[in-house]
Length: 214
Image 1 (cartoon, rainbow, N blue to C red):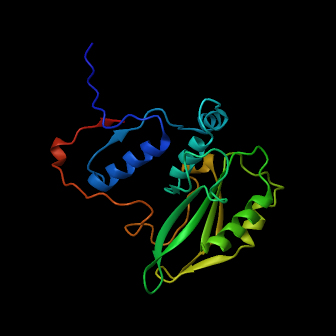
Image 2: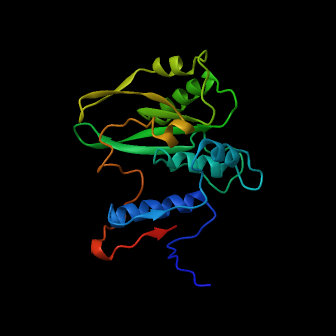
C-alpha cells in the first residue's frame, strides 16, 4: 500500500505542533494549506484531553494557549507549579514608542470556575507589570457567576495606536474560541505580534503548492 501523504511534522507534544504551525505561517503565510490531526476540534475532545491521565495536564494548557496564540510560560518539564500563576503570555506593540506590552494568560479546567480566578489573575498582572490578562475556561461560568463582573471591574486598557479601549481582563471559554464566537481582543494584533520568534518568509509558486497533512 502506497502512502501518498506528505508529512512535514510528527510529534506527540502540543508545544511542538504549535511551533510547526507558527513556522508554516511565517514561512508561507496563506500560500500553503495543511491539516492537523490528533488535536481537539470540539469541546468534548478538549474535555477528554484535560482529563487524560497518560500525559501531563500541561499538554491541555499548551493546547488551550494556542487558541489565543499565546506562548507557554515557565519550565515545561517541571510537574506542578513553578510558573508563578502564568500559564502563557502574549505580546503586542503599543504606545508612542511602539514598545511590547504583555498579556498574561491563565487556563482553568475546573468544573465550577470561581471569581477568585480573576482576582488571582489581576494580582499576577500587577506583579508582572502586564497591561492585560486573559482567563481561558474549559467549563463556562453560570449565569449567576460573578466571574464576568469581577473581570469588568478590572477596567480597560487604552491603546494609543488604535485609540480604542480594550478590557484589561477577558474571560474566554474553550467552546467559544473553538466556535470562533469569542476571541482575545488586542490592539494591533498583526503584523506586530511579537509573541513568537518569526521565521523568514518564503515565496513559493502558488501553482506548485500542494495540500499538506500534519
